[in-house]
Image 1 (tube, rainbow over the protein chains, first blue to last red):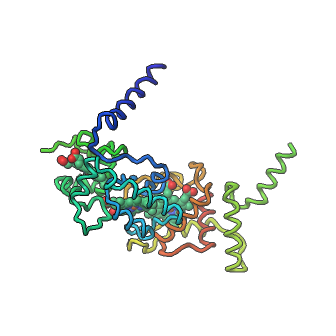
Image 2 (image 1 turned 180 degrees about the vertical axis):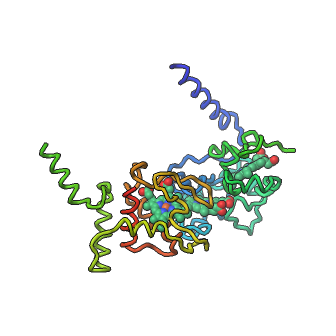
Image 3 (image 1 turned 90 degrees about the vertical axis):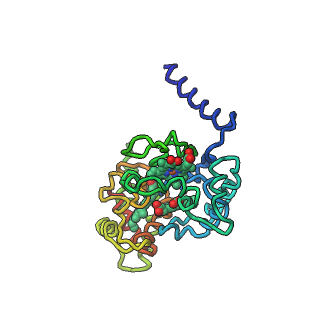
Length: 173
Length: 138
């Protein structure tokens, strides 16, 4: 009985130690906002705000009725709330996280990408993946981060945690 | 005992359309009066008409021919899946998913979005009522 409780506790504290105490900030700030997870995680994975710059989020939130060919509109109060949340947590605000920094550096100042999957950093990291691994039904498209990155919902995209469905563990070279 | 009978009687009076949750009954009533205003011969919503709305394909917002079943499946007691994002959608049928059709704001939000996705316009009060009767029956 006690063993069952103690083991998960150790695991949890291990995760926190990795993030905060040791300053190991390789990935992106995880999402903790329940409203964001509910509203922006209903049709797809709730992408971390640190994956795009502020200007991208502002543009996206200005036209939720036409959101990638679907209607994602919200009432005004919720739209405003989430626009502020995204602004406050955009890539610029998470510059201590390696991924946010790299994505930001890969976007030209005049570009306002609406897709994470079309930023140069993202393309460079994913251009060696054979198409058949992406279009298979368990994945569908590269926008489906959680299909391959088993710890994406913690903001952790490390290579160790990549498992492409139906293929053996991913090895760079 | 007396209380019991009264409750049953009341349920029968208010909800001649299956058993919508108390919070939804006000919304259904509002849709009814809107439908009556649009057409004075309106009597009640109809799950059979709702099924047709739910399963009929139409060129939607994305330019593809889709229906409500493209995401929710044709068996509302089973999971659906968004064909674009691959995300699993829990069953719509209240008989297996108690949280469905309980929160008016959620229902209004999704009906607005989903009618636009499929029919490129908002649903009328009649269409919304019909489709809610259909979903409630599952």
